[in-house]
Amino acid sequence: MTLWLAVMIVGIAIDLITSNFIFFNFSIGAFFAICADLLGANTPIQIFAFLAVGIVSLIFSFKYLRKKFKNIPKTYPYESQYIGRTIEIKNDIGKTGQVFFEGVYWTVQSDVSLKSGDNAVITGISGNKLMVKRLEE
Image 1 (cartoon, one colour):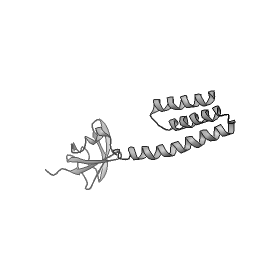
Image 2 (cartoon, one colour):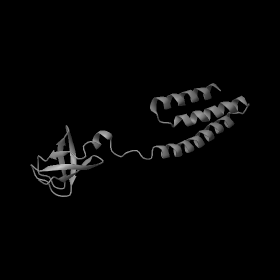
Image 3 (cartoon, one colour):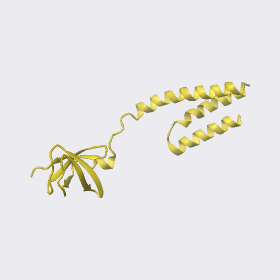
Image 4 (cartoon, helix red, strand yellow):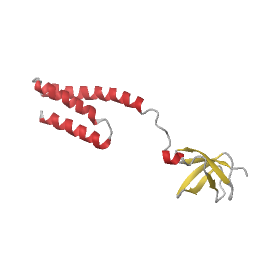
């Protein structure tokens, strides 16, 4: 019983530290293994109860968490503030190239080639690329 109690406490502690919500499911399984131990079940039945309840709990909680966190925005909040800002192109680039913006070298992607001195507006972010459009003067 002390083994299952330790597994339960460690599982809860790991989830509190990491906010992962995976090990908590096996803490529930450990609770049922403790119950099986108190009812006099032998070790293989306790292990089966631990694994069965832990896995079933993991499956149901995964479905719940997937629904709950389904609409997470794809861009980081800070980077989304870049959209609509103007950048100056320092070097000639084709449809893709690099620019220095906000202290970081970014890969930019454009529909048209950009020349040195052109201004471009950021229209979006795709992964680590800034999507830009030449600003007509």
